[in-house]
Image 1: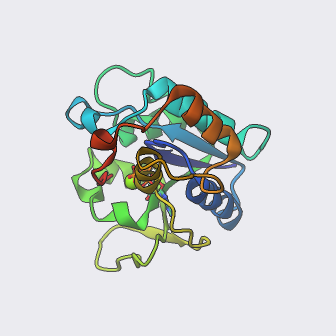
Image 2 (image 1 turned 135 degrees about the vertical axis):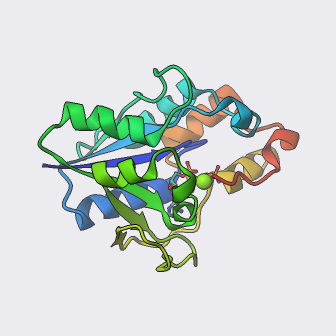
Length: 200
Ligand code: ATP
Ligand code: MG
């Protein structure tokens, strides 16, 4: 059994995420891919604009009916800062026999050594690195990385928030079900909060 973990703020989830998830599922021969919305550390909170409950609802709406995927809110129910290593430990307990794969975007790999307990992360899971818009997978790292070829789709949540704030359409960038929640809840309309680029 091969279980994949794909975490993100998903603020909001978009077709880039879904194509990565779908391609990685196939490329790694996964049994199940867990989409895990992350809680946001208090010092970063000003950058996240939708509450955790809505981010989770949007991810669920995005993959509803697709049996390959499961939305897991375990990071949202945990007290204190949310560390990937703790999530992997929880998954290891839940699936003692499974091979675990942690998916990360090539844009986030260089920060990995600064994550909490990186050696433990690579002991618990294999790292599947997905390429992203021009950012080649760095080879000057000691970490054992599994490159995961995925269709390049240059969509980001930052761009979606910018468009909503500017009154532009986000149709086709996100699933209709996600767009409906964004509109229903009036998310991302404040241009002051939506202007900056999220570095995560
Ligand atoms: P933001 O612009 O707010 O940072 P994002 O689009 O980067 O949002 P995240 O929720 O931060 O989305 O991303 C979660 C994970 O998905 C990260 O590992 C990120 O690198 C990856 N990812 C997001 N969009 C893409 C994309 N279009 N192609 C490849 N990987 C992506
Ligand atoms: Mg990001």
